[in-house]
Image (tube, rainbow over the protein chains, first blue to last red):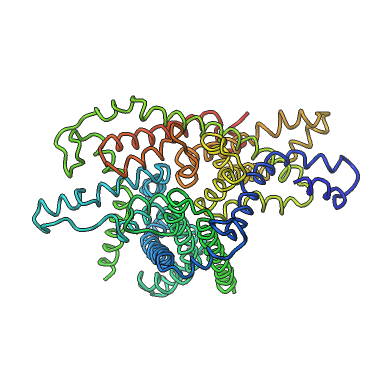
Length: 294
Length: 267
């Protein structure tokens, strides 16, 4: 921060008011971010290169992460779970996003409120809701056993299925917003023109709306994947000890094993994964936009 | 063909909306059901679980979460306004790079920020900051980027001719900030503060590393309890905190008028 203050005036245009004064309001917010964000991240990178026992420089935690089967399994579970959530969210978000972008009925406001309102409820309420629906003595198993369809409860929670259901619910509003914005950006006259020229509703959807909404689909997949991969509470509660992903394993390393270097390595793997996906996704999006504008 | 297709469309839309609302409906139903096992179709209704919320077990975490959320919301508003003022109003050189730094925490998953902060506080010897002070600092790292961006947007939308007019009429810089800029960007500041409040009040991935016995926030208390039991008192806690959040949004809206048009809303 002090570097910014002392270096900048040289580059600032001279004259009128003091050019240094403009930076003064930045001191408190940037100091807070420096102390509680930038320095901790730097320190975490440093700790990841320490030996867990002797604190000497070593790559032992990196080596362990990439050779230990438990770690690799956790990483794969995270990727599979996030991929499934991304697909489920996008498939479910499409009809709702289409409706919100194109409908003129008075139900539009109701659907919009229903789609977005759960976001206010927080993750705990929704996860609790899914737990009492999906657990062994929950609503679904209760109903299935009462009606005699199954004899013993189906395993719906504490596994991949439960986590994907819970995370899809958490991430869905973001997918809906991405698809809605993308379809809103398509000129409705294109659809009208295709319809006048004799295209059925299905072929308008298939040959006009869908191809033009691909950037929205990509951004929905991207948001869902990154949100799912970095989620903590939903996998912790709906996956439990039987379905561990990177985020919950990081928590275990800190709280139960107090292995800081290992936790730092895992957190960095997650961070690099997220940054790589965001970077690749944003590049794909800009390329798609360019292609569609031509 | 067309009818079958539109039938399918409406059916899928209905099912998806049902999926979205189902857990909320179930939680509300569970909070009103009399038996301590959460059942499929309760036959009677009761408010007894809401009565159980007045115990210290739930009241203390609620008050801690409220205290933290209020401090985080206030500081995010102040720090965000300072940053937005320098970037969007003064437009000091390098403001794009400064904004990028301010927004950089958004690119880092919360769980990673949580690990970084807890390792920093523990290994730098700041153990005494674990608990409430650490929670406040960590939540601010999370909310400040949102607040700064929202306030900066409302400063960018602010009509500079009003400022120039006041300057020509002889208003000092402080007078212009106090009487022209602040009232007109107030909705932006309040929407940033509301956002910060909700994020802080509901937070789990950062708080989970920083709570201490006796200093545990409401969401963490609830998830710890959920590991052992799913009894309906949790449904009541969840519904009550949702109602509390809706009431807070309503209150902030009354104070800040952020849903109104910026020019029509504040005088």
